[in-house]
Every structure is written in structure tokens, then in C-alpha cells.
Length: 387
Image 1 (cartoon, rainbow, N blue to C red):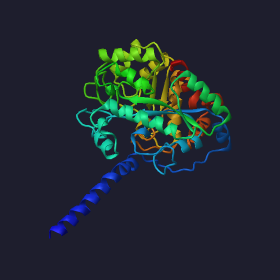
Image 2 (cartoon, helix red, strand yellow):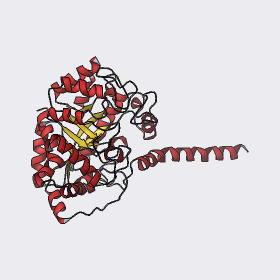
Image 3 (cartoon, one colour):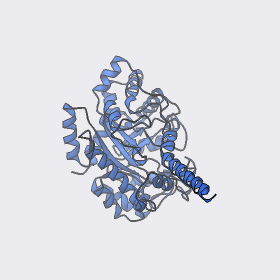
Image 4 (tube, helix red, strand yellow):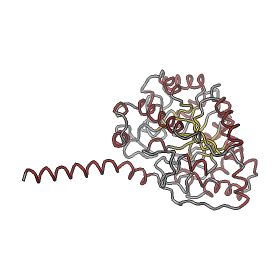
């Protein structure tokens, strides 16, 4: 009997271990669905135009998941081989460090966190289990390690010099891509503005004050209080500007939006969003907010998921782009997929030519498309990044 119990216990342990090891991959596949699998077909005109573009995506979240991004994967939307195949010049990789259970775009409390369990199951170091800052540094290290193992196919951009050298190299060899590192939610500062410097040293060049919940620097559009910038938040923005870190107002409460635009002296972005003019909900930007970003000289990254554009195809993305362009002009619009951000998307990163085709069909000129698909974002990087 004792031996039988030991055998049963052993089997149970093996099964529990197996399920624990498989759980993150199951969650990844379930949350990061691509609605239409590649390959994707566009017109000869759109394909020719697209291959001549320098494409920038202002927001993706693959660093959260247990993946080898140097391998071509059969799930999710982003990895190095698919970025290169999709002619993506720069992908902004964002760090996500906390996601409350039941988070939603209207009211999210900060009293729980699903990423603690995800990190433990994925084998993250114990120091990350109770520290948002350590989670950010861990994910930053993962991007650096991916670049180091990529054989020159992935470059991490941290300065204007890096940007110039990479673009020169890519002009003669498109078998490469690059990443810029961002943080989604300044709760990673853990209440200490000195940690802006810690993040900068780790390669972070974009910071969004809030994610889905209110924190020490200010309110989220989806939080409980939805307040404005705190004194810590104001000090953070001043430090960011001094260092050459780009301010991202995605997920910011209306009060944080107003407060930040009142004190910033440099262009500001919203890395991934929709606009209420085509998709009216609490996740998306009002006309006033769109005009506020444009007034700084900044850009708005239009997302691809349903709550952003009220549709599940490139035509819906193009409608949001058209609305924004009609409001503030072509120079202030970019792409912000939110790939691998736990939202279903219509295509993976090899399908961005579909957007170029939708823009052509909507009457945009080739030069306008060139700006929207990447050059507008490049202008911001060239202004903001440190020397």
C-alpha cells in the first residue's frame, strides 16, 4: 500500500510539474491570437511600395512571454525572423510588469497581479517575484540577450548614433531589424525617481506613466481615482526629458494627459491607441487629446485590435488613421500594433503590407504612407533619443 501511494504521489507530482510547465505557453497562445494566419496577399502596387518603406511599430509586448524571439514561432505576432520578413525597421518592445486580474478599460483596481504567477511559472529569478523594478530589468536583459544571440539580425537602439549607424547599415542590408525598449507603467519606479536612471542605464528609452491602474505617479484612464500627475510624476517627466527618454501617454487618465502636456517641452507619443471618432470607448483618444499630442509635435500610434478600431481588418485601421489625419495632419500619425499584448489581432507582423494597401485604397499618397508607416516615428526618435 505504501509503495502504491508513493507511485501515485510521484505520478501526481509529474503531472503537476508538466501542467505548470505548459501553463504559460497555453496562456500565451490563448491571449495572443492572430485571427488570420499568414501568408498575406496584397496588390503588386502595394507590395512594391511596402518593400520600399522604413516601417516602425511603436508598441509590442513579446518580452513578457516565454519565447526565443530569434526563432520563427507558430504563435503570437512578433519574433526576429518575422520582423525581418515583414520589413519592420524598428519594433518598440515594451515591458509589462503588472496586470491585475479582471483588468478592463473602465475601472481596474490595483489589488491583484497575474504576472507574479506567470513569472514564477516561466522560471523568472526569485528577485522578480516581489519587485516591479526587477521585472523590468529582467525583461530589458532578455532583449539585450536576444540581440547578442541574433547574429547581427537584431540591434537595440539607445542613442541617435545607434539610430544613424543602424539605418545606414540597413540601407544596404534589409536582413536585419532593430528594437527600442519601453516601459508600460511607472509603478516600476517603486516610488523612487532615481530609478528613472536605473531604467535608462538598462536601455529604456520610452516610459508610459500608467498602465491599467492608478499608481504613484498618476492616474490611469482605466483606474479607480483617475487622478492627475503627482509630484513624483512631474519629477519623473523632468528627469526623462533631461535624459532623452520619450514620454508615452497611452493609458493615461484625462487628468494626467492634461498635466503632462502642460509641462512637457518635447514631442510626446501615444504608442498604441484608437480614436473615439471611429471607435468610441474609454480606451481611445478624444479629439482634444489628439490635438494635444499634435501640438507637441508628437505622434499617435494607431492600434490593430478591435477595441481600438472597432474592426478586425486593415480597413478599420485605415479608417482610424484617416480620421486622425483629417483632424491634425499626416505628420502626427504612426503605427502602434499592441502585438502580443493579450489582444487578438487580424494579422502578424508579416502582414503590415495590408495596412499600406488599405491606405492606398483610402486615397493616401505614397509619401503620406511613407510617413505614417515609419518616418513620422523616426522623426521623433531623431529628436528625443540621447546623443
